[in-house]
Length: 249
Image (cartoon, rainbow, N blue to C red; front, side, top):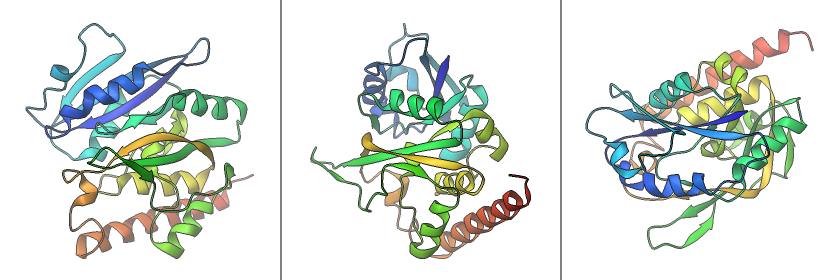
């Protein structure tokens, strides 16, 4: 059985891949499980292979035209084979046991479609701090809970960079929303509209903060583009919620 890890990478992020790989290589999975790493180069001249070992068959690299990270994630998903799909950005790192915890929850709770976990921000001076928002209680996230929080605060309470999703559910939603940013938030709210989630209380991701990331762009949190992104994300979630409400329970 396989858990697929999908990673978009552009030329500026390729240098961090070695640390991401080290965090993957250190994962101890349950008996009978293995991981594959589907890396999608977003545009030309990324050269991801130059930063990774050449003798690990679990690494699968492909390239595509530049479409942004969320398009690249979806293309990586298209090449994946695992029954569970885990996102990992090229500049982030998994903590020990992160994949095993995702697998355990999804295997033990068939009513749960996706998981997230606690995050620590990695600052440029090497120090870490807790994710800037307060976490929910560990355990079941009832369908609709993430949307209710997002509508009230206009931000997700849980970190979409930690998502692990059942393959069939991710295929139903078509992967990540094709936006220049916040496509992972759009996916999170889409998942929340149609399925229960689970919040894992242990830290599952070390999230690197640096000037080159999308979230550091001045238009990420304000302006016409932000308004358009937020409007579409809400419309998408509300449409899925309405569709889900009509489905037989």
